[in-house]
Image (cartoon, rainbow, N blue to C red; front, side):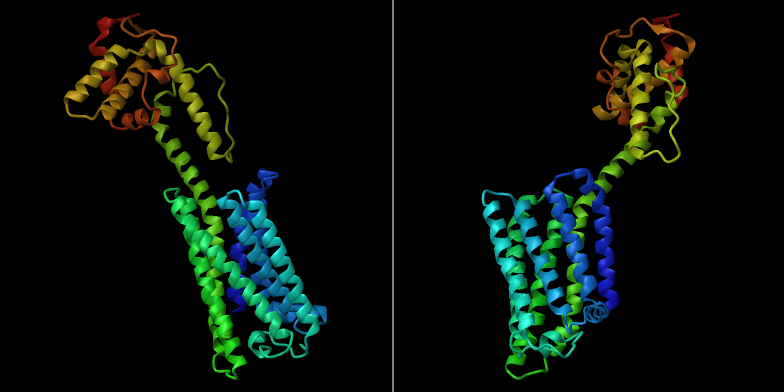
Length: 391
């Protein structure tokens, strides 16, 4: 169980480190800070709830079973943080009132847990089965019940808020996935409460045959719950970043054919040497800037009238309008590069002051179309209408 708890704590710590740059960039963003604080609390819960950590903390403090109220306080604080975060995520007009209700009720609960602990007789150290062992001990019994009730109430409210919020975030992609993971995690949290409450109630009735639910069933449920909740908070942010990075990567490689085709066009800006460790975003920005500059200088050599005739020819062969335009634009670009190399300008070219992006179609589509045609085809087509070209 120690390894499982510490493993979940490691996952949560990784999620916290992943979120840390966003928290630092967010400045005073309360939601970013609260997610980070929640992950810190969740990580602490699994670190201090591990049996080895329980025994070590008891030894360090010199107070028998000191870890019990400490771990219960961490769990209670985590529940309160989850409630506050879900309330802020959902929004609404009663956020302030809900915040004060959570602070007041769970602050009182934390005070009561510690008061019950110091009023109780807890001289026998129990690392794994404290809940059932002290289920009938005055004040310890009340402490256990208070923490379980606080956890159950928080889980119920959070589950209801999540499941009622889920229809509103459908179609939002990664956010919806995060809400689903959180909803399942909190639903399983109810199973954890049942596994903890049932043997305690059984001990009140003189039965000890259900203790295994607290010592053997509840910890695996808590491990799964911790993993799902961690993923629920990490997936929306990480998924969105991965999606953006994948889109940037796809666009960068998609523009490579057009970038190569324009490689010999002298641009107005001086070439920039990117370092080996330059970010993908910087590389994409540089590539798009180079392509726009090259097309701007290539504008006088672009024959849009000829481009239109090529597009009509592709349409007559059954190509879709988007595909025909991309193929025609790609052919026109290759022909313009060849004309620029020969220092020739087409008489029929449409000379306007508009940027070429307004005349040419989507640059990614043009680049992909370049992979389907050969530069010799464009040069051959260019030579076919040399009569419309003046030196």
